[in-house]
Length: 115
Image 1 (cartoon, helix red, strand yellow):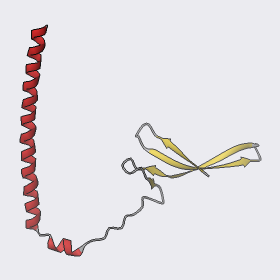
Image 2 (cartoon, helix red, strand yellow; image 1 turned 120 degrees about the vertical axis):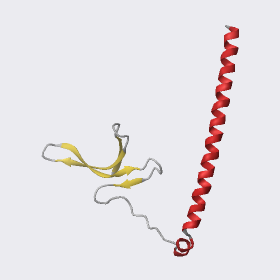
Image 3 (cartoon, helix red, strand yellow; image 1 turned 30 degrees about the horizontal axis):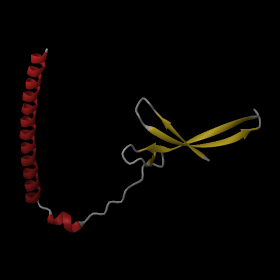
Image 4 (cartoon, helix red, strand yellow; image 1 turned 45 degrees about the vertical axis):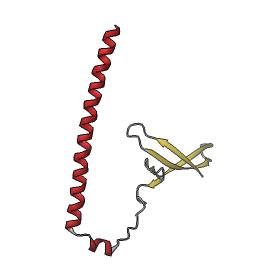
């Protein structure tokens, strides 16, 4: 049995089918049946079953000691650290945008002087 990969251009999903060819003795022609196996996950490239089979269920093992040790104060500290990092990155981004604008102005002045 052969597998066929078909790309749906409307939504960008790639489906994988199992093709079963057989001889139709009534019409004296070859025929084929296609069975949908699943679709290809764009991130991992693996085939994810669809339909009744559904996607493979991942077993998640919970580490009870880690969840009991994590308190709300730890989470608040992590959030505060992330917020500080976001503020720092936003300031850095503003500075870089200003620097880019200055460079573009200087470049346009140079271009005008040569024109």
